[in-house]
Image (cartoon, rainbow, N blue to C red; front, side, top):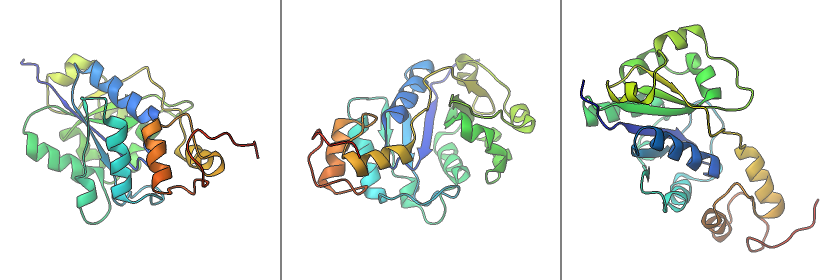
Length: 221
């Protein structure tokens, strides 16, 4: 069977985008032969609280974080849609655009464990593969989900359009966006963020950052 270059889709709030997001996206790209990755910020995430930064700001931060990585492309498709940002709608759109090209949906192990609660998740197997990035202490996925997406290797994902599961061993998605926003509000900076992203946050006064420049030393609270 002919091997095709897959397209990877990575959705999330990216509120803000951090180094673990970029590391995960680059890792999946490398495993799949430098496959392109589209990072899609949600407009209205259906499974979590609404983002603090608006879509325009989150997209701008994504562009800064992806600037030095040609395989990564910030994509505003979900931001341009009305209603909740259901992944099913995104997958259907990209399947229509790309025919039988392999599509790979990148998610963390915690999301994989709760996939059976997602909106019409059973339809995903006809639309995409899954690439699962580990997360510390994530529970196991339900047997129904494991059965719907048989485990495979990278080559297997490139040989058919959808329906398989790739389990990555690293990197770990061990960064909390909530902790990042808390650090920004308290100290004005966070090592989990790209310096250009931190500068953008200060320039636009996002996440209640203190009135200081990135890199300024602060006393511990």
